[in-house]
Amino acid sequence: MPFMTSEEILQRYIRFYVKRGHAIIPNISLVPENDPSLLFVNSGMFPLVPYLSGEPHPLGNRLVSIQRAVRFFDLEEVGDNRHTTVFHMIGNWSLGDYFKQEQLPWIYEFFIEELGLDPYRLFATVFEGDKDSPRDTESITIIKKVFKKYGIEARENERIFAYGKDGNWWQRGDAIGELGGTDSEIFYYIGKVGQEKGKNPKDNEDDFLEIGNSVFLQFKRIKDGWEELSQKNVDFGGGFERIAMVIQNKNDIFETDNFWPLIQRIQDASGIRYLESKKVTTSMRVLADHIRAATFLAMDGVIASNKDQGYVLRRYLRRIVRFGRNLKITHDVSVQLVQTVADMFSWMYSGLPAQVASIQKMFALEEAKFATVLDQSEKQLQKMFQDGNIPKDEITASQIAFDLYQSIGTPPEMTQEFFQEQNVLSTAQVKKFHVLYDEKIKEHQTLSRKGAEAKFKGGLADHSEQVVQYHTTTHLLHEALRRTLGTHVQQYGSNITKDRLRFDFSHTDKLTDKQLLQTEQLINTTIAQVLPVQFVMMPKEKAEKSGALHFFKEKYTDTVKVYFIGNDIDHAFSKEFCGGPHISNLSELPPKLHIYKQESVGKGIRRIYARFE
Image 1 (tube, rainbow, N blue to C red):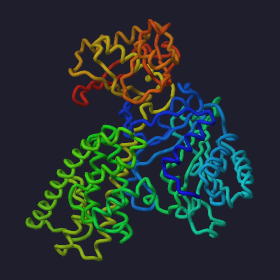
Image 2: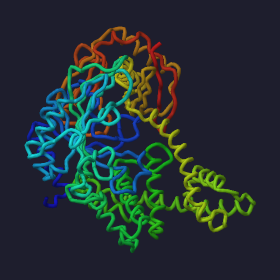
Image 3: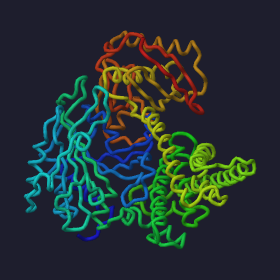
Image 4: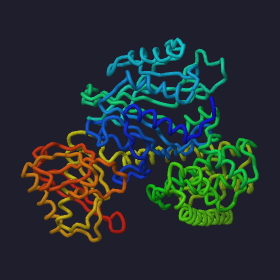
């Protein structure tokens, strides 16, 4: 197949689905600006959760997009030929419109006829069935017909493979009200031609690359399992960089046009060739992935710090410095690469080139700070030996390395090299040292992941009755605060569980007891009026003129959904741009809301907690 750039691939994808009635939705910021409870946008479907649950989307029920995403928990996996932490997802959705009969033939047609993929290298997986849903014979039948169109007899367990919930079932969470469903993945064989017979994608990961997954969301979580939805949805996601890898006939994602210009720039800066050694190749892959991630985060307004998104950016930059040292690049590693990222992606992010100078300035400061960390690390290690605190074995050495990393950010490689120079660790002991250190890191990551998963789950913990009630209550609270404190109050985000709501807003001073009481009373007297909760779809300009609140910076579509609390929008108690979901009447709320805690979360930002009593 002829070489096709990533830009051409995307143009063909968007054109293919627009031709089939899909509206384009915007590529939003990596930072969910209306939801501080989620650290990063991690999939293309993130902005669409309310609409997959039944809320009507302003642009209709057929949608298509490309969305940048970050999954920083995969940080340590970067270094092989396919794993990255920042990537783009192409997606298409049917919100209660078409289903398997349209989705599966279309996506195969796109891959084979639009992009020119070899159908003989395509393999499929489906759901094998269990107590919650039967074997997906419908998808199997459709896929067989698709392959027959291209002269291929697609037998089960040869080209079509069935797996259980661990392989071909998707669900957002386990809470009652969550959506779930079977899925069908598409894999491309990248192994040696002629040796694919009898191999399945799940057990031969080195030979197969997943390039797309069609999720059929048709179930809702209930107390005792799952029940059918009245609305059946399609949620397709495809790894854009991985698709480019097979289209551009590469076995290494870093040799595609999404990364290769960065690899070339790193080669020039280091004077070392990409494939010179495993250590060199790994280091260059880490640099290429991390600088893309760091630049996109900075583009979206993240500033390096010790908290939340800023901490992740700082970690990216420090790893860039560390792996740059492996290539003998000792200063301004990240600074040298920002311009290359901007040049590569100006076609997708037209505003990025104008931000290069400010991003480089921030990165330079971070690198300088980390140089100080390295100096402090050397002094700490020297002092340890001067004081006689010499580790006696690999176990003690690995604990010291872990403690130094946790306290001041000392890279473990630096500790290892120092211990070797002091004859504390022999060459034979180094491997065990790193194994022990990695175990400590994994233990720490497991604890951190559990905390992060709890903290950074979606703004709505689920779509249960209590959570939806609290979501509507945030609209009451927002308006009540504006009436009590002033119209300078703007929402900065919320986090909602079945037990309480958390609400961030702009306000400088601590609320007095009187202000808290006034806010509570206004909310509770409004609840007592049993007003309806309604929405209207209207042009964005008209919605803005109506006075509907909309403080978040994401790109709204030309048509927006406005939820209002009251009998009509012109005399509503509250009206805001919002995707839902909401209750239909305030009579569904408990009668008394109590604000039980407030705190400061930053300069000019207050946070309050409230629950029904």
